[in-house]
Image (tube, rainbow, N blue to C red; front, top):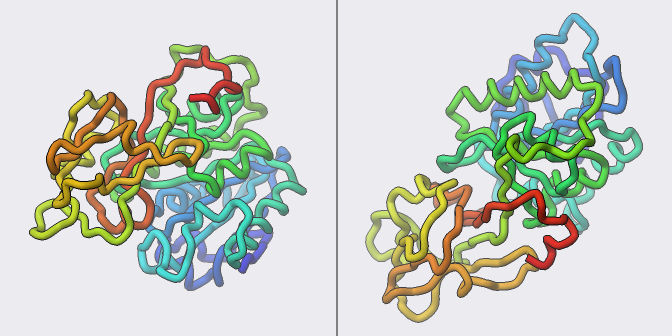
Length: 341
């Protein structure tokens, strides 16, 4: 599935994300030379409806069409077929940000090829760029609490999220090769996300090194993803329709990055027998009862948490999840103790 090229084809930078399939046969890895090595690795369009990474790359590369890059670049352009339809992924495809571990699908083999290629070359850092569908601020995600990861993340924004689930994401795999971050750049129709991502990529391209000293506590707001909330398969969800199995509160996306108190209402379900949410912690254990409870047919919070990625897009909720639950985290916590949280 993977094509590897050593230069950007003529006219590619003029194309919008949904037009890339007219010039690219599928997932494509570009190796571009530059003044410094090893290369900066950038992945875009792992989700076809999130064009911010491609738009930022276009802006960046246009500035170097007639001059040498400050550092070598390796660029992975992912799901161009889904991008053609402005979808996260096609029905017959896995999620391209869940294939970076072992598996038996052609997409797993393709992702392993990309990883092996970058393992041989080495990386300066890895940057995976995304939009999201809910009302979320811009923030960076990391999978290791090491100083270079933290410094790279705060170069984008002082809001940083540490997570180890879900597995199979690109940043989790590439964290074994060097500092890796995932950028969350807001909703696709907001141009500020492209501006912010372009500025970050340009800054990274000019870095000689990433600091290895401890980061100052006042430079970061650190959160830890403690659970993933999914909808029980096969149920009907929505906001105002009649006959829904689960009706969510209308302004659910406004709850993102707010520290919600106990008893906050998330929605209502027809059945009063069992909660229609499946919640797993970092050990993939079912912990629904730790975070939510049924008050009649009303779903309420059992403990204070801060959600992210809440959205009104029911297709995304079914394809991925309802949200992630986070707690504030102190840098005084040793990384080795996190598995016990």
